[in-house]
Image (cartoon, rainbow, N blue to C red; front, side, top):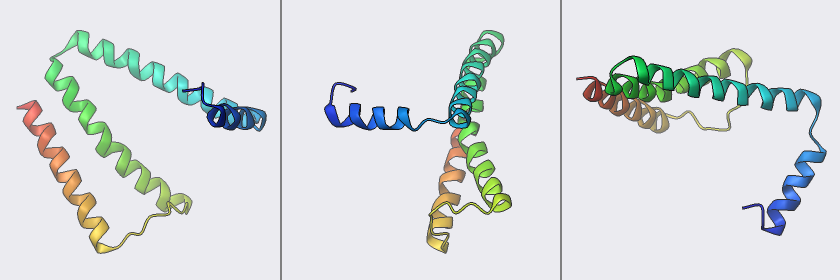
Length: 106
């Protein structure tokens, strides 16, 4: 993908504007990703595969709730309208996800 000129130029601009703080954050996120991959492989070697995959499905729900809580306490604007239609859609998606996790577990 880096063979396209516009993408290369955008990448070069971002790399020139990279600060130490941003670089450390990116490095930290990459380290957490590697640790998560290792823990996932370890979990697969220890237990039932279906149970491990059901816990991976729970990750989506966990990240959603963690993002909502983080946004409430830090007053970050997520640029998303929180009207009743959107909340119902998210609640239904969460319920469907939980049902899928339960089905994988059973």
